[in-house]
Image 1 (tube, rainbow, N blue to C red):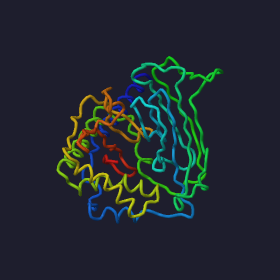
Image 2 (image 1 turned 120 degrees about the vertical axis):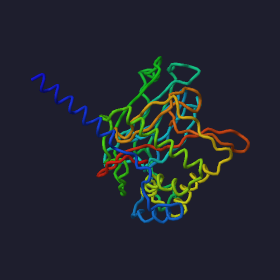
Image 3 (image 1 turned 135 degrees about the horizontal axis):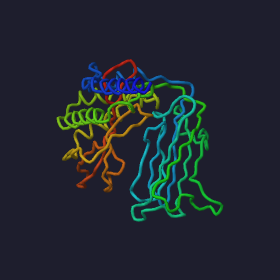
Image 4 (image 1 turned 45 degrees about the vertical axis):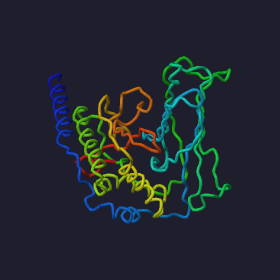
Amino acid sequence: MKKYILLLTIIYIILGCSASSNNPVNLKQNPEINSENIIVKVLQHVKHFPKEPRYVIYHTNGMCNFEIFVNDRKVVKSFNNESFSTGNEINPYLLDGTNTLKVVLYPREDQGKFNDQTLFDLKVESYENTDRFSVEKQQDSLFVYSNPKNKDHLFEGSGKERFEEIMNFKLAQVPYRINGWKDSQDLRDFDKKILEAKVLEAYKMIQSAFKAKDLDKIARFSYNKIKDQAISQYFDQDEVQDALEKLTNIVHAENLTFIPIDHYELVFYGDGKLIGLKSTKREKGYREASALMYTSNKNENLIESELDYLLHIPKGKTAFEIY
């Protein structure tokens, strides 16, 4: 019996490793897309509805840094050691029905551990896309979260170096559906070294495309993400154009320089369906950031930014694609 179990285990490992090694990276995905037709192609998939809610996460933090994930996709992070309030749209991350929210808190760099005054409040609201400037259509408190406090209203995580909480929330109206990564293959059983090599190959190709100012290639590997963003946020032509211009602005940035891809680790998102490389550096600007980072000059100041590209194997396909 033990030999039988051992044999099955060996076969499973071999199949898992061979599957991941035999899946190439499709560096020529979306061959029909180019920088001239991408806007028209994207708009062909956008549908409009009688009600078009755009959902926003608003947060306020105090005495901490943080990350916010929706359905295991990173929405926003901050490691600037500052307290502030802001909002981020989450439509591209949403699923039908129940959604998962994960909040990860970190102490400020000058503290090392949380103090009892640590604060993090979050709420999900929405506004109507067809009348986005109408204040009375704002829907307050669709979901509300505050970091846990004791009977004295002090942070329960005081003295710790990290705090994480996962919870579910439901939204009644999500009229669109985007396939994106949600039905892709779970990659967590694949050989990690092979997965790492796949992402590294894709990241180097992305770097080369931006360095060469190859707008057609950039349009091809950016198309799927821009399309899903447009569908989920009911984009019009100008909004699709704006999304594309964010990429062309990087191409034409002054003194565009990509930071060498080193000091990184493989990371899974989307419940194992998306993979990327994350920097392991702890210096300002690098913490929990993609390993795909670049610098450029803006108004005579050097700025550091990251590109948010991941890999997955879409449903019904065998090759890795960039998302």
